[in-house]
Length: 239
Image (cartoon, rainbow, N blue to C red; front, top):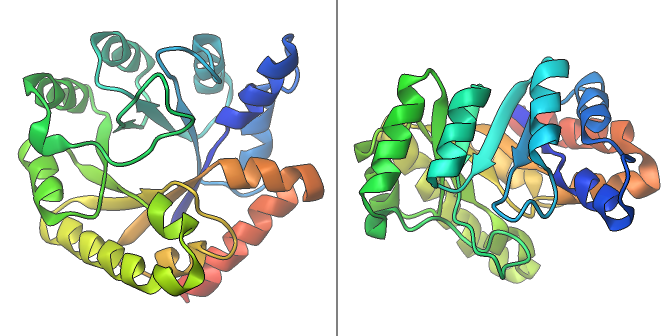
């Protein structure tokens, strides 16, 4: 199972003071050297963390499986088609949110979502959609031409331990629905050392995207150590 490291908050730290340090491109290099399988970057409309040049720099300078997170807008579709990352994940985006709050409502999305998916897929990009573990939403992703889904794990990761089993069971059903629909299954949002194992243990799961926790943990242990421990926990769960 792949571990894709989201480096957005390296840019958040840089932006707090301006200038060029810490560099998201250098962070991507370090992540790959430490054993990550890919890099995730979310270029938001307001450019609150990574900027265009960060994404372009990683694409040009770091050999990696780049997962480009984006809202379904004409600007971002155009950027993705020029960038040609290995993967794009379409996410909901609101200006006022601190972070992504939930899955995209594919059932209520307009025709532009399907058009965006088809345009990027035709360019050879693996397109996933960030959704809740809901069978109808997952089937709708398949109908629009997506090749993968990313299950939103935020509610599970943030819940009290006693509440997690029910949420985990729902995620497991979502992963099974993805496989039944012929979709690759990924997961992400809020995962940490104590929550990744149960997700990694799902046989349908092919990739997890983890960012905020790993960047935060690296303040105390360094990024290579944080990634190494996350990889160890994933490997133990898969075994």
